Amino acid sequence: MGWTNGVTRYQWVVLFVAWLGWVFDAMDATIYAIVLHPALQELLHTGAANGEVTAERIGWYGGLVFSIFLIGWAIGGIGFGLAADYFGRTKTLIATILMYAIFTGLAAFAQEWWHLAIARFLTALGVGGEWAAGAAIVAETWPEEKRARAAGILQSAWAFGFFLAAGCNLLLKDSEWRVLFLVGILPACVALLVRRWVKEPERWVQAHELEGRSARATLLHLGELFEPALRRDTLVGSTLAFVAVFGVWGATNWAPTLIRALPDLQGQDPAVLSEKVSYAIMALNVGALFGYLGFGPLAERFGRLPVFGLMCLGSLILLPATYVVPHSYAEVLVLLPVLGFFNNGIFSGFPIYLPELYPTRLRATGSGFCFNAGRVLASAAPFLTGWLVTVFGSFNSAASAIALIYLLGLAILPFATETNGRPLPE
Image (cartoon, rainbow, N blue to C red; front, side, top):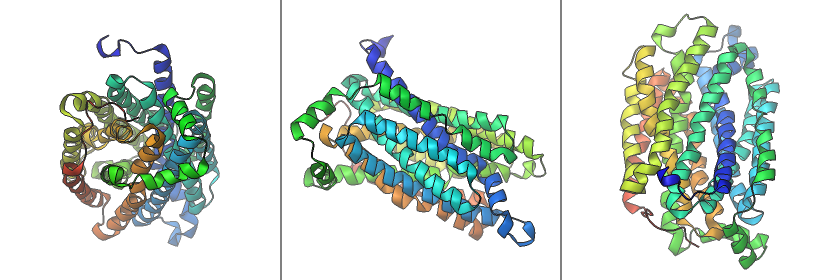
């Protein structure tokens, strides 16, 4: 089978379990974007004048909850990245999966918008931490020359998680948004698979024994990321992740709300509208799936940095092309897969590229920090989008303005280190 020759059964098991964890990770992260409108319609109803909840009010509070979620994601990614280097990859993977599953389920019991915000913050701690542990364990288990392909397959889980969330939404109605959150408890079962099937990578065991089990030393790892040998890589990696996260959460993850605002869908029956939102998310993620799986082979052939540049340029063009130019549901459905290829596909680069920048003892800490540090700043993106809605009067214009962030991604690439063809640093 070509590139899969020589891959052991255990390496496939590790990839499958980590992939499954990311599927549910993505599902739990996506549920809020799908139910944002009906959930906030209900939760904000009691405080609204004349019982009406305006699009501007939903945009404001929706963006606020999105931003709180991203802050939790950043804290979880950095904190659990440290934990993965200290306690181990598998233990951290189990803890984070349980965390995001349980608190997604608890969101179903929200009675106020801030109840939902707290539940989403705690969910995000686990979502962010699961990425750091999962990326490290796959990178350290798979053969050097096949690592990029494995990371691309791993990231494809995000698209499948979107499909799963959209599929669950098709089975439910807007009024059943609480049930959709309850479905988010299911990933807890994956933690059992991790405990039974996955052991600590030999790289981590050796590095851990060599360095000694010192919590203080592990905390000092954060400082090492900014020492001269690693400073530039850390800053560039964090900036690239910031750009990707800012673009997705500031624009693309508003797709369900944008679909609901299309002129030709006004006055639709809520059940029909919910179906159209699900199909739109599926269309977006068809393209995202090709982007996730395509990044690895492209990066092997052309290098990591040119592909990052391609994804930034494509996102810069496709965001306004998708949200401003079309005026019908059919036109948006055609463009969403192309947008998904670039705007979501860029994320496959991070489990490939970031672990290649750091030695084993710093790998989860460095990868987790880069992927999540910029998320603190990026947490302003959905809040900014919500504010821009009040300025421009539409989600379309607000989300399109966010596309300018990809200019920063293109500007930072000349300072990045190309890692294509290099072994993982020991």
